[in-house]
Image 1 (cartoon, rainbow, N blue to C red):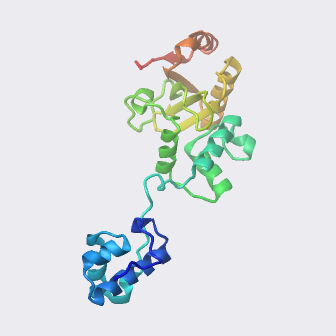
Image 2: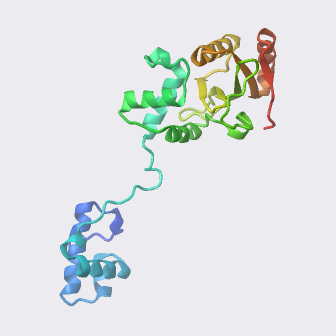
Length: 252
């Protein structure tokens, strides 16, 4: 049997659906006409095992066997958001707070990120999926360091909400310079954060705390768990201005 002129010897899984269906039909037809499976495999550029699988499927299912099943997405294709969409989201969060975009949030939260994704891309994501993206963007840090002993309860001092807080430097999706993130988690697991391209100053720290207090609608006590050593002077100034800032720095 001569090699079929229309066949290119490439992996069958790399073929478009229509081409794969046509190849399956040709392979099965050749075997059904009496050509050995080994010869058919060499002629059509597929493995002997593949030829046997296709022939058995045809014998069991008939015409239905020629229609390839929809393939699962390859590794890296499981993400609901493309790389470009993720880059846009992070860049947008860096440039400002959600209220400046018309969203009903003063700081970025899981809900605020989900609202932005739905408004921009018409995609609805669960809080768990949002967490996966935040971890991918290195915004969450190490949860065991940020909120140790989290038990879902409302822990407070004198009726104040306690927020475990960190200043992290996540890796950017675009560009070589690391970003800056202020991240706060309540003992009930509610997450707040804001991003910046440059280090935070006293004014932005004060604004962060003000927005936390307004969004939570309560007085708060900030417990600092992680802070860059090069910004220790700013932390000291913040504590001098706001005595309810508590240091509980984790080793990292």
